Length: 203
Image 1 (cartoon, rainbow, N blue to C red):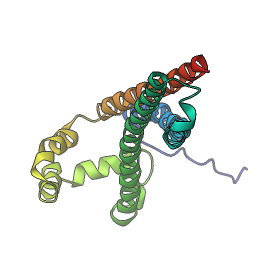
Image 2: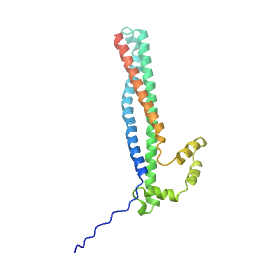
Image 3: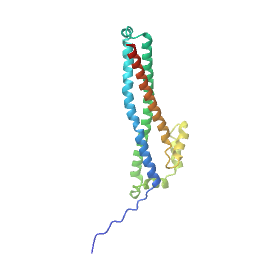
Image 4: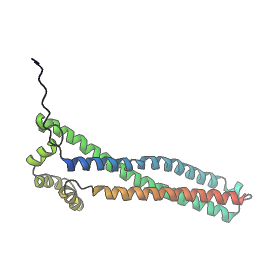
């Protein structure tokens, strides 16, 4: 007679919609992570353009015999516009990074709340979400938050807190920022290349 007893499978509740949402969210975050790579490249180009402007302005008297005054103005203009696009790109990258840091901070706080308030039997699969949905009044949470933030942010907060579970609408704005960051970085490089072309044609 076999004394070994087969272990019964765990009855784990799986929310397929939530699982699909989290998979989509992971894919989106992977795409948005390109922002840091674009920003790193743009930073090098921004530093180079700024250094070139400083060099031209510091040695403008020595450059005039070799390069015409009009071409120097064009080169400085191209470099200046390149720097402006670089600064705009940095702003988009900072905004995206800030949003991602806020999401990471919210996840950290959620894990902390999970350990403090949720019973152990709920701490797996999708049960923590079910526990919070059953025991927290969303209107009360919104009311507390509204007392802590400025009035002009109230509508945005209410919209984010009351949107249906499973929607990823918040990422639309982030994708627009990523697109704008890419455009700014591209224009930044194009202006820098334009300055180089004018310089080569003037020599």
